[in-house]
Length: 424
Image 1 (cartoon, helix red, strand yellow):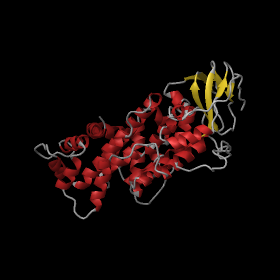
Image 2 (cartoon, helix red, strand yellow):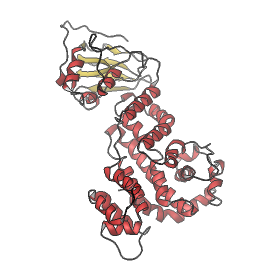
Image 3 (spheres, one colour):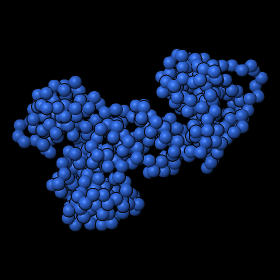
């Protein structure tokens, strides 16, 4: 790394208000901010100065205080960041080794901070009193981008700081209620009344062609009675999960929208295949389809704070492919999901998976995923149905691509009904 500090000004310390403009520091206490500020110095650079060099293993991350910088990737792509914008409020060039040359577009002010130090402060760990804050670290010097990202996710998950929306409280409370001795429709309906959106979706489900019997229902208790408590619980979890794919930062909205479309499509097909097989709960299959790529949500959420990932589609694709299953399993275990659903998140991307002798929800979701690829470019990168071991276990009949198209055509109306339940 080469730093340029050519402006002849005396060293200046940042104050807590300056630090608080950066998102990762907003949750620090005043005392922590003061301690951090006392150990930092504002750096200055003139136009054209190289602030950070691509390939450097320096553990420092850059925070832009004023001015503008250019981030130049190895392929020549250049991104400009301007102080005071949402992008500049995040850490810049955080991954080790550095993925960009960072150059000043004009006179700039910036801070260099050891990111591991910020994590320690967020955990409430005090630095040694005799030395203040230590701003050097060898922890990240040998880690690549993927290991750095996974390490941060694991660390935050273990300390309940995972940057992922929690399941709505109603889904958690409903799950706990089902573990109790006495759960009935009236009791469940009382719990649901605090979440009008979930209640409205349940009534809609109870009146849909998938569950309706005769007269329409208009009360939560009647909807729960018609659906059954177990189905109600699975639908509530499904509704909650579908909301996790909504509204993310603008640069990654398209990515999250694609994940949303994929999860709801696979969930709907899983429901149909479960009904076709007669060996699985349709509602549980729907939930399995929704959570099969839950790990991708966490990774994309974290990418919002890593410009190197957010703006590098190839790197993000590779990170998703390598880490999605492992991260998904971590999340679902933390949410106390049953192991058969944890396996869906961990293993449904492994086309060579053999698994148990008896078919499970992972097998079902894998076949649903293959069906969802029909007619899309993904067909060329995925195996044929007759090449995956899980197909025979499901005993769904002769599911050649041509037969699968016929099944999907016949089931399209039902798929749309299920899709309408879990999508807006």
